Image: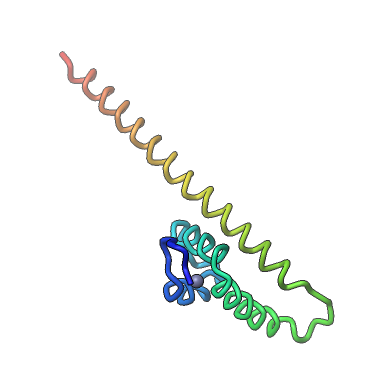
Length: 113
Ligand SMILES: [Zn+2]
C-alpha cells in the first residue's frame, strides 16, 4: 500500500534482498527507504527478511541481539550514506565541469595569438 512514493510495493519487495546485501545504488536506496518508512506492509516484509537472514547467521552465537533495533540502524545508515553519495555525485559533476571550463579557458589563451 504505497502512498504515492516513487517506488511501489511490488518493486519495493523485489529490492529487499538487494538492500540487505548493500548492493543497491544510492538513488534506489533513497526511494526504497522512503517507501519502507511510509509503508508498514513492506517494512514488515523487510523485518522478516532481515530476521531470517541475520537469525540464521547467528544461530551458533549465544549472544542476545536486538534485530529490530539493528534493522533500524541499517536503514538509517544506508539512507544517510545514499544521501551523501547522491550529493557527492552532484558536487563531483560540478567540479569536473569547472575544471573542464578552466581547461578550455587555458587552451584558448594558449592558442589565442
Ligand atoms: Zn509498500
